[in-house]
Length: 145
Image (cartoon, rainbow, N blue to C red; front, side, top):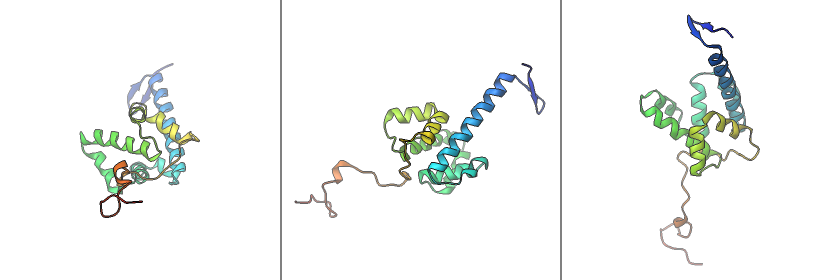
């Protein structure tokens, strides 16, 4: 195969085709994920708004999408939002967090296509369940049966 010239740049054909393939997987994965979360699927094709929709899925305010524009912090924030996305589907183990960070595109595709993975709702700002508070009453004391 010959190199492809795109905007004056010569790109090896195998790199170009690989990029197109991964881009199609990303679009399909996000489309299925948005559908499962009852969000507008067309948002996948709107740059910027797709990040806002992702923030809505995990329960963050819309303006948190702007945090991706902060250099260096955006790397941490990307990992954080990926882990919160996995938690929104009930995937809260360390293995799931590592998988979503290492294989993001394919993990999102798995969440979107898997029949077992159900959207449980936003996790950001949700109260954390702890075993210590299960037996206490509203005043902070232990409830007597």
